[in-house]
Length: 244
Image (cartoon, rainbow, N blue to C red; front, side, top):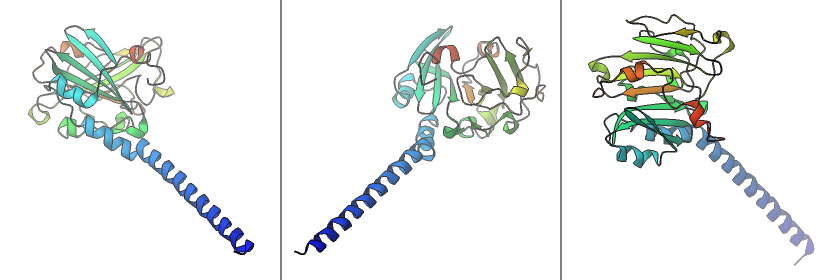
């Protein structure tokens, strides 16, 4: 065989191998990008869509896996689970889910709230601000501490909402931050309103990263009405370094 032909063949083979390697690298990049965005959101949403108050703990954990944190908040046990772009907190008694909270931690893994709220609340958790949230609510709370802060709104829709109570909130363990314009002096505090109202605070730049749903069969709502934080406590989940 002519040496020139051999050299040509080797050159073609090397070029083909380079093309295959480049295509493989591009495929891997596209796959990882898909998994981090659209594919990851869909996979996570399939799990979150199955959450429901009244479910057995066994049903929920078959989908969420093993709880990373467990804490007691009388009269309920709090169990916190880590997904790829979210924290999920279940509050349980008698092996039954009485409430659950979803806190989105990665904006690219934003999650729509319509399905879990009977279509009454339509925001993308981890992405939308309270400008996108329903303006008519039952109460709000904005609070600023020395190093902690939060904002939440309470909603109740009666039968159209399945008689469940709902909260949209900003949780420090989730995506987004309080923009500088909403950082008031430490200790500023706005408590729940007693009746339907519109917001008394400028929350247009605060990201909604948490949805909390409470069962219609759980009537001890004072345990939720008295809280500043709904969803996982930042001081707890931050112990999971690199995941909080």
